[in-house]
Amino acid sequence: MLDEEKSTAEKKVYKKAINFELLKQMLSGDILNGDEAYEFTWVGKKASIVEANKPIRKTLRPCPEESVDWDNTENLYIEGDNLEVLKLLQESYLNSIKLIYIDPPYNTGHDFVYPDSFIMDNEDYNEGTGYFDSEGNVNYSRENSSSAGKYHSDWCSMMYSRLALARNLLSDTGVIFISIDVNEVHNLRKICDEVFGAGNFVTDIIWNSRKSVSNDAVVSLNHNYTLVYTKNMTVFCANKSKFKLPDTGEGFSNPDNDPRGPWKADPFDSPGIRPNLTYAIKNPNTGEECWPPKGRCWRTGEKEFLEFLADNRIVFGKTGNSKPQLKRFLAEAQDKGLTPKSLWDDCGTATEGTKEILDLFGSKVFDTPKPVGFVNKIIELATSGDDLVLDFFSGSATTAHAVLKFNAENNKKCKYIMVQIQESLDEKSVAANEGYGNLAEVGKERIRRAGNLTVWLSS
Image (cartoon, rainbow, N blue to C red; front, side):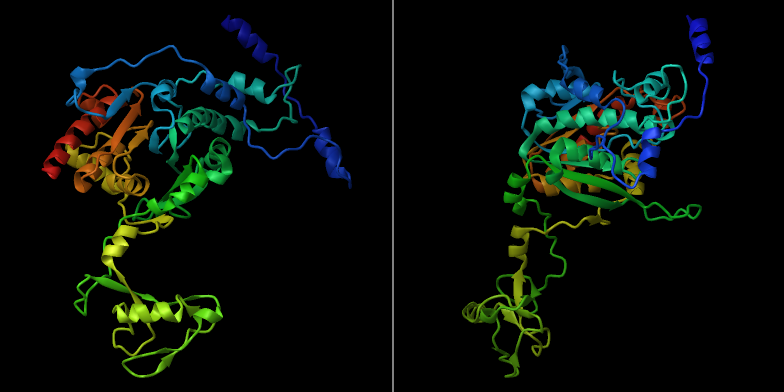
């Protein structure tokens, strides 16, 4: 059999060929007839769609002997291929999960550990792309080149089916955060636009993942991306007042000992020109009249201003000689929350993620973990305190650690579902040398150790 395959391969003669359709269009001054469409596709896409919809005849087997507080815990750690697990979760958790956070493989050119049936070998890929014609010659009219194709195709197929299943699990107010680097962020955005709908794109968070500079690089890569999509933008926008970060109180003070507590002075003017909001305000300290700056107006009418003034909510700068400002009390700010920014540089770095592993295990049993602070910020932003969080690329279980810490520090009751395939460890790795059989073993042990820490933290 091997000899026959070798003989067939030897018969393939590579010849230069011309894409006549493209040549005719290039030589023509008119648009020639032909099918055109704006779409994102790759070899294997149809197979990944079929795979996502295939039924599964498997079940989850409980392991109480490996669990902590089996009778009372509402958290789940599932070992297995996440494609199969996502199918199994459809029945019990359909439209039930508020937050999904995943940190999938970044496609650095290595083989995937996920044994998907639609990830092709080179021969299947060449056939699917039309790399060879019927006589075994190179077909230059194919859509994708070999050098740029399979490298991305397998990754896109792996992600598409899983995201399609994940969408079904999100509640109508749910959101998914997906961390990724520069290798596949462009393709991931297109896949998510198709799976979740382009109109359900919320933002792309830029995380300042490292502080040091790579001096040997043309440009030092110091950030990662996190794409955010919602299940239903209409519902999400109706509830976006809850998509806030807690106000820490930075910049608030109480120089006049206001009984309502610390406050911060906000401008009393706003953009735009509106006659009913343009009037003279008399500074009671100087007797001078103030008018809105050019191109702006006051934020309320005169009647509301006088009510604010009588309620001691208007100040005129630190010296009392400036234009009017409106007090915003810390209690109000904390109740309203802060609108998140798209640039995150205040929630830890990759170095801190590694330090957290070292603090827990005493050794570096996992490379490049996300810091707990980064995932914690996502949980703060996207949950209400008692929601369900899913991570189906669990890795070292940073998300589980973050949920436990978030609950302990904020008296909340979020639950998690972690999914991790039994990924083999490099036999020379620190984790393997310390006796861990696979990556899932590392994740489970991290949860146990993090759980002990958070029990102490909340007591």
